[in-house]
Image 1 (tube, rainbow, N blue to C red):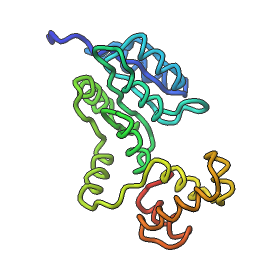
Image 2: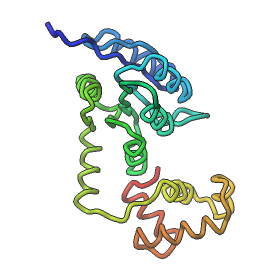
Image 3: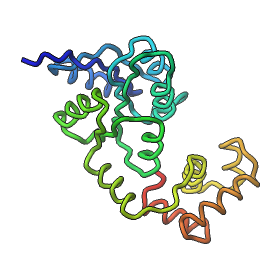
Length: 214
């Protein structure tokens, strides 16, 4: 019998049915104790501050309000606690943009919902110890980027590229991101340069091929 204390975990997912399934699964797993659940990013941040769990299991898309990336950033950067919580992302999204944003926000691991329960349990225990846990497809994408490095797009450039991939024009992108059209044009020039393209269509093609945007 293990002498290690159980891993204390908070589950955050905006879908009640998914959350209930995770609670049932994890609640019956030896070595893991669910101490809280959240349906929004704001709730997850508040619970992490109050309970200081070992791991926060975090979805990325959480509807209105804070998304999973911003919630992760706030949880991992929260001051004042002697032992912060680790965040393990559990999502269906595996684009380069999502992976990059989550890791830069401080996520310890990135797991896809298609993984087997055993992989989830192992990732939770790894994250609780501060060790990186990545789904094989995610790990492959990270390694591919390391082997073939390209100029990294900033978070703002990724935001603009995502809007571009949805077919938005400069004016609509500016409105959506609360910036000027001139700023959008400046960012687009940098995006084209980094991706090695000359047109909006070229940028969208590369973004989809390299999964830089949904």
